[in-house]
Amino acid sequence: MPSTVIVGAQWGDEGKGKIVDLLAQESDLVCRYQGGPNAGHTIIFDGETHKIRQIPTGILSGRTAILGAGCVVDPEVLVSELDAYGDRGTFYLSGNAHLIMPWHVAIDQASERRLGKLQIGTTRRGIGPAYADKASRIGIRVQDLLDPKILRQKIEVALAEKNLWLERVYEVDTFDLEDVTSRYESYAQRLRPYIADTSLLVDEALREGKSVLFEGAQATLLDLDHGTYPFVTSSNPVASGAATGIGIGPNRLDEIVGVAKAYVTRVGEGPFPSEIPSPLQERLRELGGEFGTVTGRERRCGWLDLVALRYAVRLNGFTSLALTKLDVLSAFEEIPVCVRYLLPDGKETPHFPAHQSDFHHCKPMFETLEGWREPLGDDLPNGARRYVEFVERELDVPVTLVGTGAERERVLARS
Ligand code: IMP
Image 1 (spheres, rainbow, N blue to C red):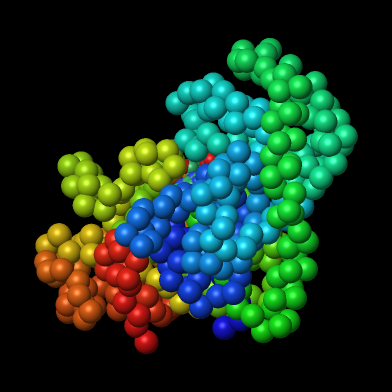
Image 2: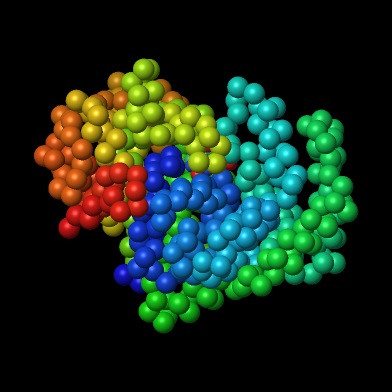
């Protein structure tokens, strides 16, 4: 198919990196359409582990990698990744993408501290404040790097306000105009050759019949509009975000692949109905290596939640699913799967609650499937196959890829 969108179907960390990497082998272009260095993809490539936060991982295998207009870019992170991986493939950056400035990071950290128990649990990389400035129309864009006079002027205008906030509201250090300007001018020198009209590039590639992969960062339930607000990221990971974030029509998206872990994890705060009680949760976390790529934080672990996944199918229009890390469940004799929620009014529902307080107070209703207690090879053992078929039946979406181990090649294709 000429164009494929890959979207995390849960709260992130579904192992998208590996599926993206696999599908990137058949793609000419790999594009990110939203998010910034809050995403962390771990790729095991040629025996080495790479953690990439900003550039699409397709660059590792020599593809053309693109960051679209819907992204926010931390130039410090980007430059260091270009130093490490830039010569492996081609890279382009939209001039319309917004820059993460040092005050965005400082505000993200200070406001989380200030929220205390009410904090969102952000990655503290400045993502929310950068998108907030974009929406307020006071953001600084990648194309502003092309003109040193404009860049300096915009930094000066921004600092006049941000320094007041930092000093008086958050009571933290302020930033110096000369310092920030000279740092961003040096990033500008380095990034200039990569800045391009990426909407046009992708449009032309599709017209030429090339295959384009759109790689969603974060995931469906972290979507700003449709996720578990306020415990969400500040962009639109859902599949339709690929069209707006890149600048092409939605009718150009052919396949929509949802990536779901065979269980669920969540970092940060917020309700999590299928969360596993202690000490089983710790066992699953250790078995699955569920610690954040970017932050190193422990991920909360839960059983597969088909109510939430059904919602993800609705929001994204998945044409197929990749079910990752099934091997981690091989250790369990019985595997509960959440099939419905029991709402506070006593009603059962297979649908994700539209209202936050229902979601906060719902109880998971499980069906328990038998485990398989053996390693996953090229053929799935009966129990594992039944687990996958159960998911397919409940969601009415084919599971075409199954992750059976950490290494790059441990993915089974199903027809
Ligand atoms: P932010 O994107 O840093 O603003 O964080 C907002 C929410 O999204 C927090 O709950 C984060 O933990 C979560 N989040 C952001 N990026 C990722 C990711 O790549 N994986 C999982 N969760 C993420």
